[in-house]
Every structure is written in C-alpha cells, then in structure tokens.
Image (cartoon, rainbow, N blue to C red; front, top):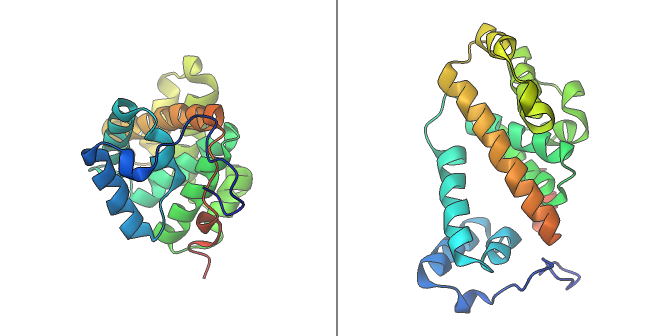
Length: 192
C-alpha cells in the first residue's frame, strides 16, 4: 500500500503470507534489502507464474553480465519509462539510478528530458537507440548500429540496450495497465 492507503494496483494484491514459498522468499529478501516492500513485488504476486518469469528476466537483464554498467541500464529504464509515461518505473528506477550513479540530479534530468541531461556522448547514443526501440523499432537500421559502434558498443552491448528497452516497454505497459503506485520511499532515496 501507499502511505495514503490507496490501492497499489487495479488487480487483487495478495497478502505476502499467502504467496507461494519461493515468491515469498524473494519478496522477503527484497524487503530486507530496501527496508520496505516495493509494490511491484506485491502487484506481480497476483500471477505467480508471471512473477517468476518477470523477475528472472529482470535479474538477467539488470544484474547479469553486460558491457553496460548497472547505472547505464537504469538510465535506459528511465528514458524508456518517461516515453511511456510510466510513473511507477520512473520513480522506482530514478531512485535506483540516484543510488548507483551517486548523482542525485541525473535521474531527474533523464526523467524530464534525457536529451538535455548531463550524459556523455556515448550514453546519449545509447539512450537515443533505446528510445528508438521504444518508439520506432520497425525503423531500426544498420546505421543505428554503426553509430553505437562508433561509441565503442559491441554487438552484445547493442543487444543489451535493446533488450533492456524492450523489457521495460513490457514492464511500463503492465504497470500502466495495473495503475501500479510507486512506494513513497522511492521519492527520497539517493537524494542525500
């Protein structure tokens, strides 16, 4: 629940103690780490098989080996989530970027307009591509890859940029469908 006791989702949200054991362990571990239970875990608890698939792929994309730093992956999430008007992901992943980058301003800049954010030319190319995956994936062509390679991205990196963008297009749409509410705690994390 949010602090004002409004529902965190349009769909039923199971009580944590009613979740299957494997999911309950994931929720408990994340609660212990964050100091609160991120609403996305409870909202996805509505469909346990979806929870398992979603969080497995999330962990692979966002925490697994990659030529992209974890902060760069969070930058992609923010740029894509802004385009998709996803409040949950913009707020939650803004907190993650503030913490990972140790920069309390960067997340707000990317959330407002990544094109005006204080990012490197390499990161700008990465975000341009992620937004193109989001808005016009059918128009991706060889010169998009050439531009990224000019900034030192490998084909594996380009795959990762596209995969993170595509996954969060799914995530944003599900969060918007469910009207998922971000926890109030996310708003202040990483700002001190």
